[in-house]
Image 1 (cartoon, one colour):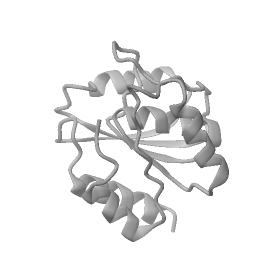
Image 2: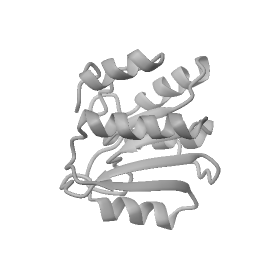
Image 3: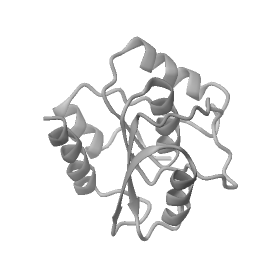
Image 4: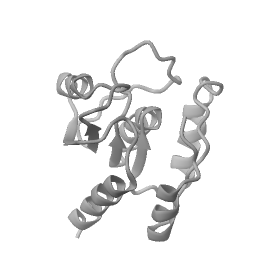
Length: 151
């Protein structure tokens, strides 16, 4: 539901090469995941970043291609939302870094934590004081944490 053009994307582009396709998960439910798989297969991807439904897609791409991720309020748990078709692969090796808003009333943090606890996943969760929208400062903070942990 968010634009793929934003100050967050601009900031990331100043740091790295960024693939930021427009994701229309409501209309492209059948093809969206395969389109994203093509990007992963044709490029060297070091980190997948996603939020909400983009976090859902990023989670499953990370599992398939063993690519670490940074996910903000990912819509992982089963709910009433119609989600794009994905390949559900269990991967206990890839690191999933989740940043959840304590005040998120769209993707409930305790549900996401429960989903991760019930799966065989390698993950790190941080709770922040935001709602469903992620302020750019949180993106910067957590992206830089990941970058610094590589050193």
